[in-house]
Image (cartoon, rainbow over all chains, first blue to last red):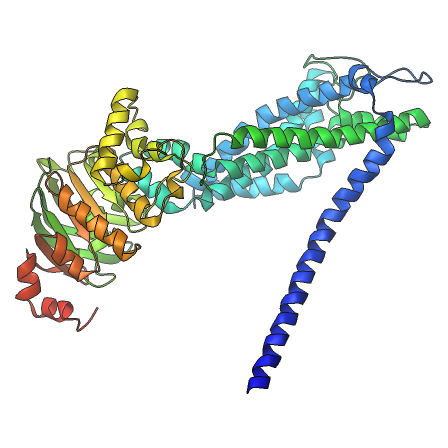
Length: 288
Length: 252
C-alpha cells in the first residue's frame, strides 16, 4: 500500500514535469519566429538607419543616401484616416451586435458579413476600392488608401468589440438598469466602459494588421516618391516603398528596404505600446 | 421616507412558464418584510416585478397591479422612473468593475445627468455612512476600484449605490447569501438601521435571517403566496400546513 502510494506520487511528479516542459517548449515555439524575424531585421536593416532615413525623401536611382521620411508620414496619414473610418464603424457595429440586435436577423446578417469581409484577400479589397473610389475620382489618392485600410479594419474591430461586450457579466448591466439608468446610457457608460480594455486591444490588433498591408495600397494610395499630405493625391506608404525597393535591382535600395521593414515593425510596436500606456493610466488599482 | 406597497392579482410568466400566480399582499411602509420559500418558488421573480426589472428579460410578461405609495407602477410610470424610486441589491455583489468606489456610489446620479460636485460629495459620504462602509473606505474613495474590496464590502458598496439615488423602497434579493457570517451580520445590522427610513423587502433562504430582521414574512411555494403574516406568527404558529412543513425543515 505504502509502495503503491509512493509509485503514484512519482508518476504524478513526472507527468507534471512533462506537462510543464511541453508548455515551456510551446511558448518558445510561439515566440521564436517573432524574435528571429526581429533579430534578422536588425541585422539587415540597422546599418542603413541614420538620421537621413527619417528626414529625407528617396533619392533618384544611382545617388547614394536618401530616406523614407515621406513614406513614414504617408503611412501615418493613411493609418490615421483608416482608423478614423474603421474604428468608429467597427465599434458601433460591435455594440449593435452585442447589445441591441442580439438574436435578430439583422444582427446575424451583419455578423456573417463581417466574417466574410474578414476573409476577403486584401488584394481583392484593393481592386474593389479601386473601382469604387479611384476610378470615379479619376486618380489615385491618399483618401482611397485610407478608405481601403479602414474597411479592412471594420470586421476585426466589430467582432472583437462584440465578443468583449458579451464577456461583461449580465449582473453589471442589471446593476445599472436597477438604478434607473436608461438602457442606451447603461450600454455606453457602463458596459462599453467595462469592456474597454478588450475593445482597445481589438482596435490595436486591427491597426497593426493593416499597418503592414501592401497589396490594397498598390491600387489606391499608389505611392509617391516625394512629400504629399493632400488626401486627393497619391501618397507614399512604408509597405509600398519597401515593396518597390525590395524588388529593385539596386543594392542600396535593398538595404533601404530592410531598414524600412525594421522601422515599420518598430513603429507598430511603439504605436501599440503608446495607446496601451495612455489608456491604462486611467485604470484604477484592483480593477480587472 | 418609505412608502407602502400594495400588490393585487399579480401574475408573471417567463415564456409559457407561469412563475407567479395571483399574488395579493400589502407590504407596510418603513418596515422590513421577508420573503421565504424553496428555490424556484417565485420570490425572486416577485421582487423583480416590484421595480419592473422582470421586463428586462424579453420573454417575460406581467399582469395585475402594483401600487408603490400612490403610484401604479405598471400604468402610470416608465420603468426608469420606478427604478429610481425602488432600489435593488442583488444576490452577488455587482459593483461596476472599472469605477472607483466614489464613482460606484455616484453612478446612479451621474448617469442620470446629475452633476453638482459639491452635492455629489455629500451624497456619496452620506450613502457610505448609511451603508456602514464609510470608515473602511474614506481614504481610498477615488483611488481604489469597487472591485478591489472584499465581498462583504462590495455588497455594502452596492447598498450605498442603491441608497444614493434616494429610493423609497429597497429590494434585496438574497443580499447575504454569497457572504461569510461576519459580513452577513453586518448586512443584517444595516437592514435593521435602514428600515426606519426605507421600506425594505428582502428575499432570503435563511429563515433565521428572516426572523432576525423582518416584522412580516411571506411564504412562497410553486409560484403562489401560501401565507403572509407577522414574522413571529409564521415561525411559531403558522396557519397553513405547508408553511409549517417548510419552516420545520420537512422540505425545501
